[in-house]
Length: 307
Image (cartoon, rainbow, N blue to C red):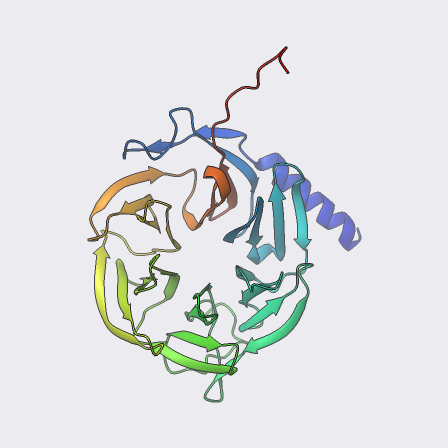
């Protein structure tokens, strides 16, 4: 059986295993329309991450399966890359391409619109290879900030951990400079700026904490503050919704947080959520441990027999 046949079979299993729709359950009134439902885009993956809308097109990865996907209502599911180096975050670079973190290569890279790597931006800090870059975010000044936990070294003995800790890094594409922005983590994971970019929020998966750092004008961070603490560890992706509330992926589902860290509500999800992306006109995408789901906006039925 050749590799193309294997890919076709694998994609067939992914599509067949996807649950068509499931009702959305959220205990915070007004977040979703009454009839809102999860629509499975694909499932059956060994890890799924990196939800990112570009216009009406969603990008995401089944990273441990080596796939990167694109999906839209018009085109359906398309394989963007079938040899992805465990990419787990895709952020627009402002020139039609993407800033990407790759877990296999342990690099921050840039891809073009076709999914081809065109540049390695960062692969080492002070002469030591990066751990396993996990998530990245782009600030309005063009700098790229990414988490670098030390996942999988115990399962991949040929990969050697070189850095003395687990950090959050800041990369400036203008100067090609990589700077350590924060340290002292136990599996730094999700990362997002507040809408006004005055604070940086990070989940530390080895703890039950969401951390908040003040962002200074010179690109440095203030001291860490615990913004929220939950009963369980294993926190993952973060995103701010259009109303300025922070959504956090947890083992229990997605928790919605207010400005003071208070839990406002819980969204129960079909699986363990890993990343969140808000798209145009009310589109929502959530990757989960084994698949990707979307919630589409309600549309009024078109009138028949009128012009």
